[in-house]
Image 1: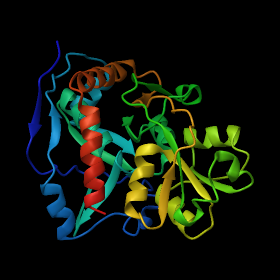
Image 2: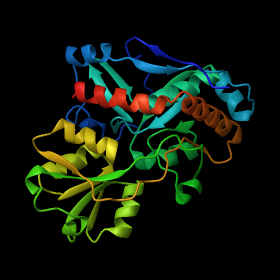
Image 3: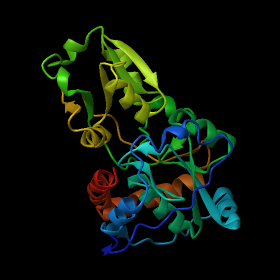
Amino acid sequence: MKKKLYLLASILLVIGILTACGSNKGSGNNNASGNNSGNEAKEAKQTFDVQKVEVTPTELTGENIDRIKEKGEIVLGTSAEYPPYEWHIIDGAEDEIVGVDLEIAKVVAEKLGVELKVSDMQFDGLLAALQTGDIDFVIAGMVITETRKQAADFSEPYFEQGQDIVIKKVDEDKFKTIDDLAGKKIGVQLGTTQQEYAEANFDAEIVAIPNNNNMIMELKNGSLDAVFMTNYPAEQFRSRSPEDLMVVDFDIPNEDGSGIAVKKGNSDLLAVMNEAVEEIKAANAIESWFDTFMKLSEETE
């Protein structure tokens, strides 16, 4: 039965952040790369309503479910520099990670009746952390691929989106088609499906960079000629520098759907993830969350 949908008119709740040793690699760039501080960020958060999903507690049991319930918390692994999926908002001493993926994680935690903890790390280290047990699940706009399915088990997809190229505005007349980028330097995030696609399909020098914020800075300073990423984050980075950057659509095929990853073999926990995805889809919440967090990202720049 479809669950009822309602609006929660309140401030975005602060999610406890668990910083594992070494998990914040490269995070020294956070403040300089679109994370906000002070009263402006706080005021912006207060104006946004986040659609909530009516969550049914899971009746599933299993070794991993029981372990998490006994511990009283579940640890999410994510890479919080990818708005509107997830990014930092800093208000004085308060560092909050917000975004679409965090809302999904809240649903998972609520289904299990436990507290949500967040471990923020570089994207290319997420599946390794899952395998070593440092985190319980991954939600980071991670696309389901055959290669990744060898390292982790994935839920049903919760979202699919397109892929775009970001260039400097001054190069608008220079790069009209993807062929115009032949031999040029195109930045991609390390370990992503954009890296795989670009290396297989673009006749260009592909530069893999761990951090999206650093990649955009490399584009601005001329070290890169273009950046290849999914369209929501591409639009967010453009909106932060509308005088300098633009997004161009070269009819690149959509990427495959994004899913929630758990350690391979954790079938009981995977079943909970699929329950959460089903409830979220039934409530049509994903589109609403993207709209909300796109706007919030622009307001808190």
